[in-house]
Image 1: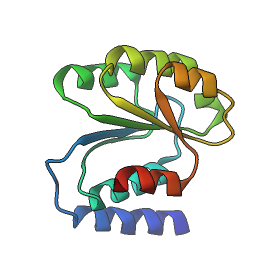
Image 2: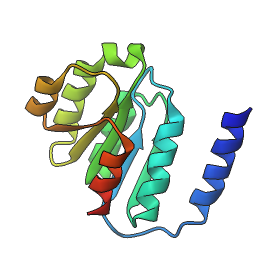
Image 3: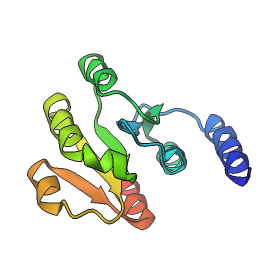
Length: 139
């Protein structure tokens, strides 16, 4: 119940923020990922810092992302991999993002991930705390 109240009020705050023409961020959760509260909070922070945000939500199929890559210029891609189910497909997802979002900065929010070499190889920045994210979008 408390989570619903927080989410509802966060959405109300987001609706009051004017949209910007600044760089575009694509926010989504890949297949089998449902931790939407953090993604919604990231949207709020990005909008407050003047960014344009394309928010897709939870459990987004990869083919939907492919279509977006073909029609919209995306400067930054932010996705979460928190659940064990989404971590199983992390390599597949990262390979997909590298193929379809070649010129896009990619950011992964995750906890306890031991894939640093994989992330470096595919030029994905790991965000493992909120301060790192705030610093990134405030510069």
